[in-house]
Amino acid sequence: MALIYVGIDEAGYGPMLGPLCVGASVFRVSGWSAGDAAPDLWALMDRGVCRAVRDARGRVPVADSKKLKLSNQLKTKHPLTHLERGVLSFLGAAGQEAWDEHSLCERVGARFEDAPWYARAAAELPVSTGADQIRISTNVVRNAMNDGGVELLGVKCLTICENRFNDLLAARRSKAAVAGEAVTALMRSALEKFGDGGAGVRLVCDRQSGRTDYSDMVRGVLGAGFETLEQSPRASRYAARGRDVGAVFLPEAEDAHLPVALASMAAKYIRELAMARFNRYWGGRLPELKPTAGYVTDARRWLRDAGGVVTRDERSRMVRRA
Image (cartoon, rainbow, N blue to C red; front, side, top):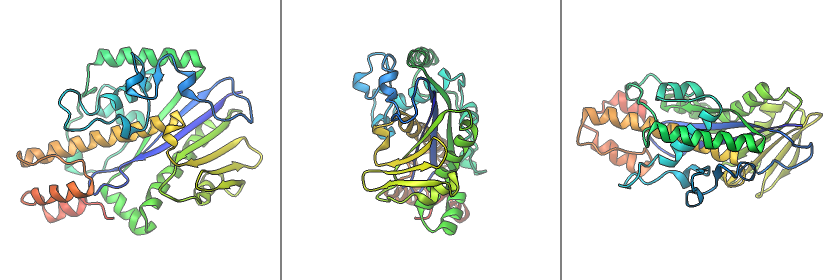
């Protein structure tokens, strides 16, 4: 029996500028038995994948994006080195190579609002290394997946840009609800696309803050036909009635489930590329303007520094409400 193993995580939950990105990765794992726990994909793909950069030795690190994103102040390596290598290598191993931003967004379903700061010409990829290095890493990942009986079915990233974010926030009244809408959509999409082939399905999501009750989100995916197995600080677990489908929300899920880690990496990579476009655009209008990652304290600094070139309408369109 096979298992459809889905991981979901977000990037950009807290910033004032730039999109909220919610990523998902979907794997099929062969040789799984009903009732078994979700397998350790790091172990199954140990030949080519590892958890930490220090253990790489030719393998591709897959981990929480916060652990792989390097400092923007680092002079010796591009800050996206490890994120980019992982995301592009896994996409390539799934036959979905992306050699520029346009093709990457097509592969993962990322869409951006019609704002001039996102309308720059698509940059070639990779931005942190050479294409040959990505091809080598792609082969490493492909061989590891073949050895472990693992197949990547797809990577998706929903992008909620500033206007959409503010509209949803006004309607839903909380950032958690805004992110939850994207998480629900990704779970539903994965289940509808891959959940009817006789395989078991496990949906694993990173928990949002201290929330423990996700029954409303699960209802949006499974309808009323589910039962709550656990809602505790440790985990929130749900199971469909009459189907081998389970959903779990965990704190720091990216440390325990490789699909969640890869989703985290994809979401962060897409957001970082979007912010690079943002900074290139505004740097063109004010060359001395220092780039921003969009997080609140620095976003306020950036808005002060850019005040002479940002119109009132542009400011309204770009600033996310808390």
